[in-house]
Image 1 (tube, rainbow, N blue to C red):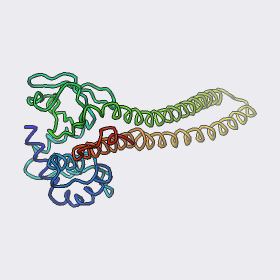
Image 2: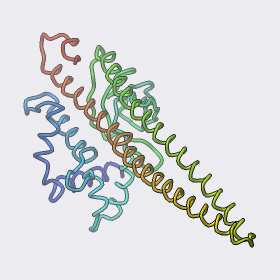
Image 3: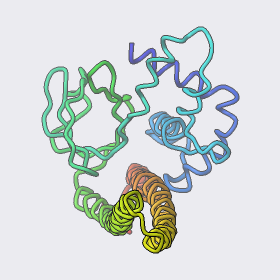
Image 4: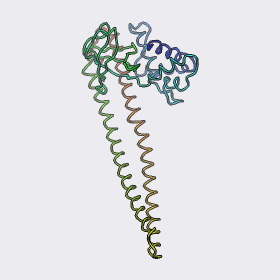
Length: 290
């Protein structure tokens, strides 16, 4: 059923209105992944990888969503069961994987971006993979199991050190954003603490107001209450602004920028693999380099 769901998704994505940006999408893709020519040995596979990127990864500027998200959100028609099935594809894992174990009908892989392990159903694993090989792939979750889409970009053995160093650079950039997010959350916690203390003071003053009979004391308590109500409003505004700032920062920097940087690296490595495939006498170290 997963194969039918993938085919259904591709059929919809390659027809209007979702196919309207295929040409600019391909130009955008090739800016990072390099030009793809019909006489390339891996032409069909490269085009399949492009189509996956177009459906799963590329953000449509006018909608700020991927084609997959647009199809799911706008989904109508007779194939509602298949549409329901592709909804789970939102949680796809696009990564650079290393093979750790190969069995008759499954493989164990590690995503080098986060060191997460996956047991992926793959009856052709012994045909496709060799232990410790590094490749670009996309994993789909389906009915409590993991599957590959079937399109891969395999990188040569000698590229492993370079690939891992590039992933480390990506992780360092992400760590800077995580550190900044931690600082913002700490600031929000401090403001919330000030707000809670102010609310506590207001409650105490309100309690005193209820039990005071002295006009002078009532006047003093009302003045204090007014003062702390203003302070409370100030801290509430600070907390609200910080919460919005953290939400935007998390979405744009922690989630989207991290994913974008990973995708750009994957495509850059794909262009190197394509150059290596075309090369005859160029040493690997002169291709897999910055």
